[in-house]
Image (cartoon, rainbow, N blue to C red; front, side):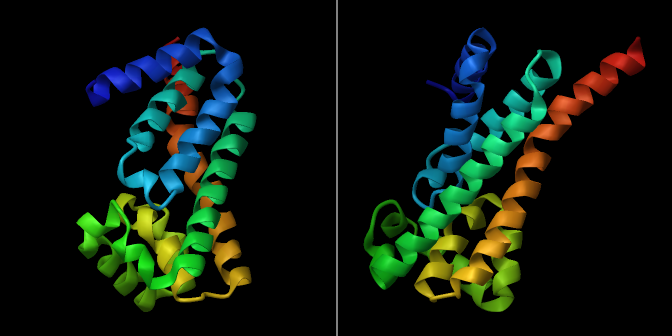
Length: 176
């Protein structure tokens, strides 16, 4: 199944079953933020498509935004815990064992930027997959990690959903 077909399948399902929008968006954001899953799941593209669906339907933006932010927050939190728990053994696990440079780049980025790296890493796909994991491996203080995790999750969720949700409404109103 191609990426386009997956996006279309999920978007059509949510369009037909709007009650499932919140749990599906939560799971997509969670998967996009989990260290191992995000390397395999094209959730960003699907979430952008669902943002557009919000703009053309009667779905309410704010509960969906909260679900995306919560999914992103918990995904990074789980990744942080995984890194703290398994430490250096993480690099021996699939799929990171097949892409060791990803973990090395994430480690370099985290070492350079620290708490800001956790915040900034959320907005860059390859870094989003490993920076929380590296923060756990490096024993970053939980309070600092969670502050960066929480604020970046709120902003990321808005940035991924709002352009489609509000842009289409604005464009429709503007065009009359």
